[in-house]
Amino acid sequence: MRANLIRGCLSVAALIAGLAKVNAEEPKAKPETPEARQARLFKQFESTLTNAVLTGQFTVVGKEAPPRTESYTILSVRKMSQGDLWVFTARIKYGKRDVTLPMPIPVKWAGDTPVITASVPVKGYIRESRLVGTALYIASQTYITMEAINPTTGDTYTRWEHGTQVSAFDLKNPAKPVARETLFYSGYNNDIYATDKFLFVSTSVPKDYYKTDLRSIAISAPDGTMKEMATIRTAGRVPVERDTHYNTVAEA
Image (cartoon, rainbow, N blue to C red):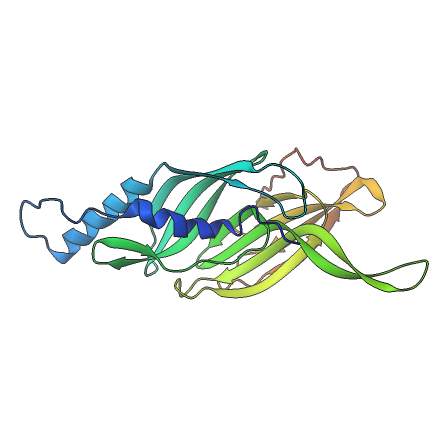
């Protein structure tokens, strides 16, 4: 069983390559320098993709339901200083969710045509992401299989566990992303919030609906290494519809 809602929203990059073909037949008033030609192509690439919209449908394996609409709006595209890496900021709407995510994507050029050359595999559908230097951190909602023991018979069986998976990728070489570690937190519809230093996942406390465990993960390492920090158990329950916010306090 798998959730195929987005298949890692970075796979959208393969679809937008066709939208971004630069017209090489435009008349030129005078011969261009290589620098001017590159600047023109980059500018045209950005303007072509900005506010481009892709609309499709998705289904969930194992659930009897008609296809639901999902759409991607590319809000902006900008060139990064690292090699061929570009950041696509996309607004993704699927079901009742509406999120905006930055997606670092390597773009190569075949003459005047931009080509998307790589993707990052992510399980489930993406809830949040952060690009810190050349490290990409992604929180997605997915299922994993877990071994469990029947308390009555003592038999071991396999069950599906719904939860949040936090994945890290090293993008020093954008054409060959390196998957680092992953963390998994059980719970349905966990609340997620991220800064450029920490990613927070709030999960329900088993057998205690009125309490929440707020887990903090350090995501400031440039190579994609994650470190689990404190787990804070709240006195009450954190509603999913409420946003989590993080503020730093300067000490005197």
